Image (cartoon, rainbow, N blue to C red):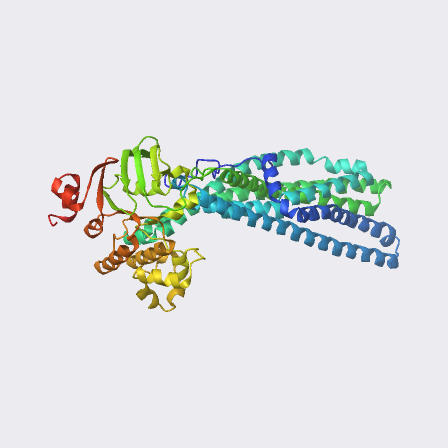
Length: 597
């Protein structure tokens, strides 16, 4: 399945897995916390207080044993017990405050990052989406941002807290009895070797988890989006088997990662227990010799447990940090990828658009020099209605994509009203060049929202008039909630013809100077086609239009027909003129419609 859902390529590759701490990436993440620094500083300020309270508890146990329990002073013991309980309450309150502040910081940074990523992705060019599946981009915006949030709640700041606590434990143990402390720390070389061994293997295992997850996401997005085709070709069994394999691969990768984490946890626990055993053996001898009190030994055991606890959890924190750094690498790789198509610094363009289009010796290829358009030239006068025909793959839809700058021309010049489209402000250009595609995309929301499509300055009366002119008003008002009817995902509760009528109403509201119809009447029944053709007649009146179509009725509407062949305009003229010539158009026409004229 790797060929179908590859994880590779680019600065946001799913296989990226760097260090658990990267100063360059941390600087970028730190900059993202600027609006929430008071939360970060507040959380960090609680670390020393938490460490002091936690370190006081074993010492209170020592005092209780040596000064009160062994001495039989039960009244004094009550006071120490009260202090110990108070320290527990204070410690839990401090940790709750820390957790709240860290989680809140992570959630705020995650919110801002997701918003920034979404806005950035919306500005990227069509070529980017040709190379990057939607499932991978969803992983960036959802999973990777979540991993960065986890770093704030249980990663970096938690590690800082652990370092503060560990430092305090070491200092207190050395001050109490440096020989006993060194005996406890003697197991550290073994611990360091074990940690290095498991960490290197956990790193590779975690990389595999990320790769498998990305493949699973990409497959799932594609399979659900294409579920209709899957059902039509009865491929449910094959798709389920493919999903089962990808899901099993992800599970196995997770098992390996979990096994290494669990092994490290168990090894640290065993070494910690060995340290306690060594402490009891050594400390017991010192108690026998009278150089160590029983309370001090109990306190040492408590400090030892507190020393090994953060080390025992270090594997989980390391995984969180490594995940966050890998995710940050991909996030910033995506954010720092500039859109290939963007507005010039000093845009040009007339205030009133007449709609003159000119392709002057335009060359274009999607890949390298596999030219789709080759030295393509033609002109469309303002208000002219031009149809573009040709065999599949001749570049008809490519002309649409170049005109609204979904892609830029490779060579030559494409202009609107005498101004190269690359010199136009991108928003202004797309505001004046409208497209009604073959497969109309309807968003989740109401019918009214889909027609208005964010044009808040348009009145409801104008919206309803547009629906009426588009022949959509009758079926809209027949809906249970009329214009407030909810549109299901991708407009599944509307027929293809109804979606086309809604697209025409949307275009009437949008009111562009140039309108492009890309196979807008294909795949509809004759009744719907009649309604669409009537609506298109109103829509195209008085505006420049390019009509890409095969249907006779749509082609006959055109003032002029351009015939594309091998990326060039080989013939042009009216329907009757081109048929009389008996050239490419006549042959295409006969193939599609037979001998009728």
